[in-house]
Length: 265
Image (tube, rainbow, N blue to C red; front, side, top):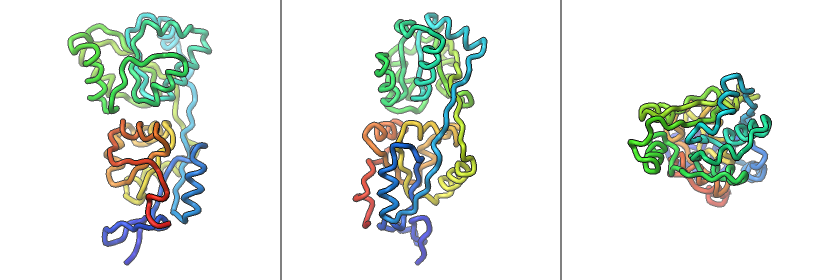
């Protein structure tokens, strides 16, 4: 009986770590996990973490930044949107107090944590990050008929479209999309391989170790839901906060990474 990518040809999973194929982004904080898996003889596929760079504000963006007090809400979709947006405010010497009168929606606990570091409070934190659920959480806070003429600001990655924007527009809200960062990858060949392996079922388990992993996959798969991409892949998280982020992406089969639970080493 032959083994391919940790799966026996008969369809039965092997219990040995050495017979499984794991994948992760090689973030700085994942060194210990990599060492554990390599010492156990696991087949490990390491992909380069995403590189992010600031999008220089154009004239339209500068105008938006100079009239932040005109917005009712700001929605932060990910941790990099927080980091780059606040970095731009600091660079342009725009006072953070300009955000005090705005309501804040943070898409996930990791995003909310980033905001707490600069003493910004999130008014709405949806349970899951699917667009319909985010809009429902906003409706619970605002009331469904209260969106007309409300002004929402969305700091975003330059190339990704956000379905939340369409939902807000359908409720007659005003939405302003503000590109603040851009994702790039140094190893495009490896990224293409990751995409093919995940789609082709060659990976047994994907280990999430940083909030940027979700941003990277969102970029690689052009916003396709992770629950669909990883439907045949076991999922684990490196720590409690990442586990929470995994759950927010509706990946319900996930658990915390522990080598002693993976089978015989």
